[in-house]
Image 1 (tube, protein in one colour):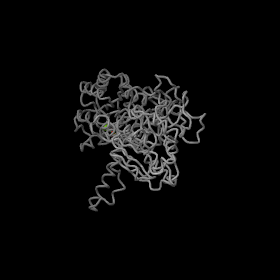
Image 2 (cartoon, rainbow, N blue to C red):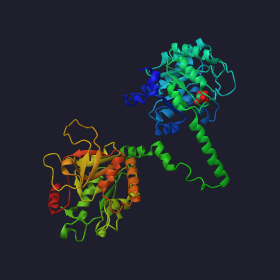
Image 3 (cartoon, helix red, strand yellow):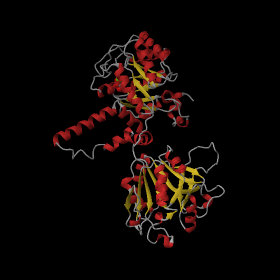
Image 4 (tube, rainbow, N blue to C red):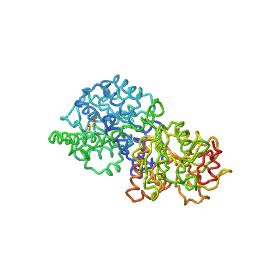
Length: 551
Ligand code: SPV
Ligand code: MG
């Protein structure tokens, strides 16, 4: 299918394989069948916002990078200062960046060095305009002088010959329409630049309507992809560009412009009011800043690399009494003695040995009997009429950073916890693969996962929770949840949010953990790690006898 026809259709590149590099990703955007969009960014933070909002590529605008530095779009920032900004942007995101390279900062020799340095920093492409250094923004004045065609072709050739990644893209920007030289000149230049090796043509126009763009597209006939910047002809419906066969639209400066409006308004208000009261609530929270710059990842890394670093906390649910007759008359099940140490003591040591430094125990029934050096206690005084979710919610202020949640009556071997702690998943559950011979009877929380345990030593493909509950039929179950889950800092945020959502729906008092986890799985990946045995819970006297043999 010809390029121009294909672009009118649905997003057929959706099914294309994910590109291996950012260079290839930009190439796929510019050469792909569907209309692509590059959103302006000018620093690491705005780059992150562009990526967060779903754009697949960034336009590193010369105008806005300069303005964000407090400078004019006249090459006042040196090209290496621009490179520094680009490095922050590139580090901040995984999507490709097309940088506005102005005129290439000089002649062919400057372009060569620029292209090599851009490739080094993982910048996927550069756009070079056919003007002279130092440049002037296209929307300033009339009839700006253009570069000699041959000289500019030399810049393009030198750039192409210098790229160190085959997929690096050079876009040649034609300023003939802007400087009033007319359509013939624009087409002549586009042809020459294409022949010199430019991968795509940016045809720039400063008219309020897009007629020049449509004429250019029609006459150009898609000999190379066409990139446009509709800053001035913004009212033209995007579909018309799609129909005209445009490859890529650049939204060139709107994040900087919106930030100027927002910053002005905030500064004005605070200055007038001499107070923050009116502004708080209208501006992004400090927590949002933490989220954007990835504080959660640092917390996890601190736990991994820093002695005495961020704490991993466990919340142990031990509010219910358990029905073990005489044994649970004066103390809850978690305090039953198992060969000289209580169940809880054993659980807490396993958690501590696994790197969990702080253990909070939610107690309820006979709470005074639940005490242990080194633990924090939280009380669910309504334990008799509430369930697991309510108990967990009493400790919700502690759900922050990496968090382990465990039932208070489980014992498991250290390697099970270690395996959850080493998982990169945001939520991961320890699940006993019941389909193996020797599976125990009297199961509790049955799990349906998207893949059953294969038993294959080499099989480490991720398995996700579909649902969990007492109502899962054992024939349909992939395993039994051991009552042990680990949440990353991000997973802990999701957990807190879900508790709040269930509270808002009036489910806080009655719901159990399986329904909470099932709801989480509908919104986020909840990973399952299969094990076979090496754990137990204590539901009855037989379990208790087994527990006494467990250690
Ligand atoms: C930029 O964003 O810096 C551009 C596009 O070059 S324009 O300002 O429209 O010329
Ligand atoms: Mg520019």
